[in-house]
Image 1 (cartoon, rainbow, N blue to C red):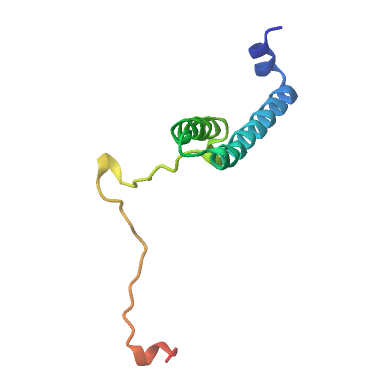
Image 2 (image 1 turned 60 degrees about the horizontal axis):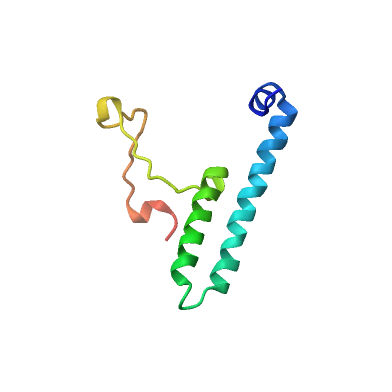
Length: 100
């Protein structure tokens, strides 16, 4: 049985594989501090490249933890405004609020 076939057909194997990839992502991310700590003025360019590569891999292996946060834009149908209903607005004077 090929690896990917086993991955698709064996739920327990798939769960263990996913967990191993998650651990791998944490390890990749943990290496970043070591790389930064070892960098000096001559190796800072290489260290930046290594750090960026590990950040990218960690983001792909565990996107919920290390992935780039994307801005979410909410809109209604056809990109228009979102319809809101059932909201009541009551204007209260400061002396009526009871928190003064």
